[in-house]
Length: 112
Image 1 (cartoon, one colour):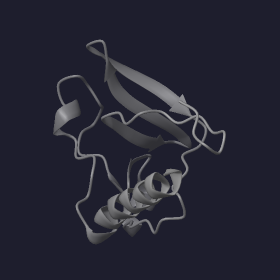
Image 2: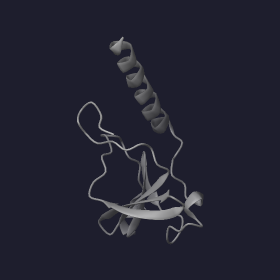
Image 3: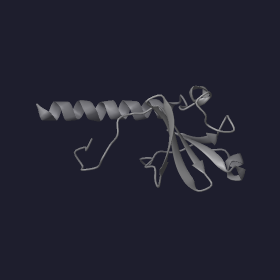
């Protein structure tokens, strides 16, 4: 799907994003299979990210919408995929949702 700025945007996927030894990986299910895809870049939209200093010693870091954190499991598998926390419920995550809803509403009103 191409948005109004000409960029290609994907629909939401229930996915786990990892930074592993300098590479960014995305794990998600497609047709009942666990897919691992590589990405050169993730745009974090200038948001303030929370992180702990212990992450500097880790080779695998989980990327969530507002936080970098340690991965709870050793490897992402079909069995533990749904046990991995993918969101951190905080004010900033709710603020991102509100901001997106506001801009959607504004675009809807301006189209009339």
